[in-house]
Every structure is written in structure tokens, then in C-alpha cells.
Length: 110
Image 1 (cartoon, rainbow, N blue to C red):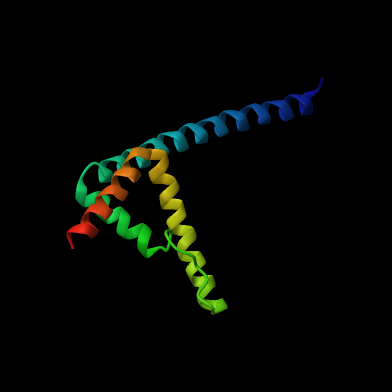
Image 2: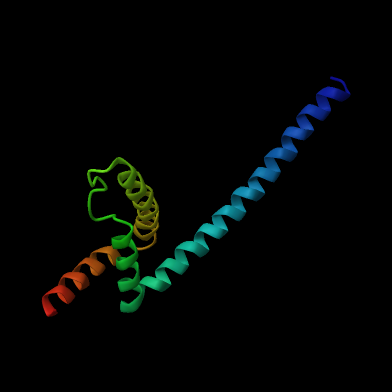
């Protein structure tokens, strides 16, 4: 066991500690993000906003429109919407059901 063995294994330990630090930071940031989403979803205005966002991203309908280029644009938009949908479902699955009920109720009123 020489100097190079020690350096190889020491570097690995440092990288592991650095990675742990980055992982912990990412976890803290994710907790904040999900808290932000819960805050938005905690009131009717926030839920309406989120529903409009998902609708405009094309989450609730197919992307295919007959034109390949427009379909690709629609799929890109939909992919972003699906990321928001995943965040919403992780943050507050019940909020999505509430949003659906509120949307249906608003449609009946109009």
C-alpha cells in the first residue's frame, strides 16, 4: 500500500462526501418545490391557474393534428405539461381530483 493507493481511495471518499452533499441539497430544493406547489394548490385561484397551464400544454388531449411539424411542437408542449402534472401528483394527489371537480362544476355554471 503506497501513496497512490491512498490517494485513489481518499479521492473516492471525498467524491462520495461531495455527492452526499449535492444529494442533500437536491432533496432540500425538491422539498421547497413541492411546498411551493402545495401553496399554489391550496386556493381556488391557484388550482384554476394550474388547470389552465396543464390544458394549454395539451395534457388532456392527443398531440397528433395531421401535420408532423405541428405534432412535434405539440408533443414538446405536452412533455412540459406532463412534468408539471408529475410535480402536482407528487405534491398533492388529492388536489388534482379537486381541480377536476371544480373544472366540471365551473363548466356546468357557464
